[in-house]
Length: 302
Image (cartoon, rainbow, N blue to C red; front, side, top):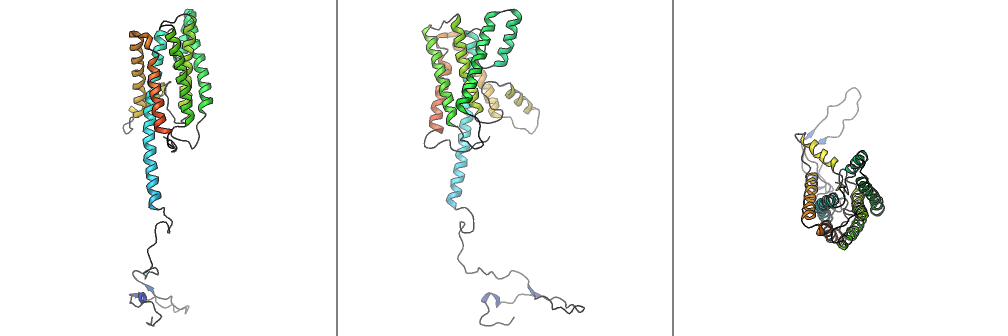
């Protein structure tokens, strides 16, 4: 190519070229030579384009995204810790119901169904009434809790406010139980035990439905037979990691039952304050962790 005044400076350099052999049969003109090596850039000398101009997100947007991801993971860890605390509430309430309210559970409905069958076989009317009251209360609480907390959604905060509302209603029921218990000086007998057992069972039914609102498979704070099966099944796989949340929930159930049993046997009058203290602490943590300054607006699925 001859060098003229109109030729760009970048093309005045010489590159080694590869000539194509002529085609004698067709007589077509050979293609123009191709440059070997790097072609001259048509954008050489132009100002560098920013990331926003070439379609990438600006640095500030990327930093905001990373911060939101870290904050979401932190909130998910706090949510799991609160699930462990709620499981302690279940364990303590079950211990109180079994030791002080006629030998029935307030959250383990499969156990109550077995006790109901035993009561029928032994013709024990009192046991049948206690288990029946607990079952009726839990069923009512589950219905009310589902109505208050709602159902899982595809896109929802880490901790929806409706769950907090349901747990607040549960706290109110525990308060009613504690006041009634104190009115009887910690010694309630007769038909009152059926009502008190139903109140506690209703509270835990609300809690169960509220936890389902998270939409996380396998997450529960009351019925934990499936959780135990999952943990034991994980132990059979070599490369599987032990689910820490599930193990913590199982330990919390035993710990809550232990605390509830100790208080029920040594200081029966103060037994109702065990679930109230734990659940009250949970509500306070929820208030400052998820429901202030727009907290809890991150999307969850884990």
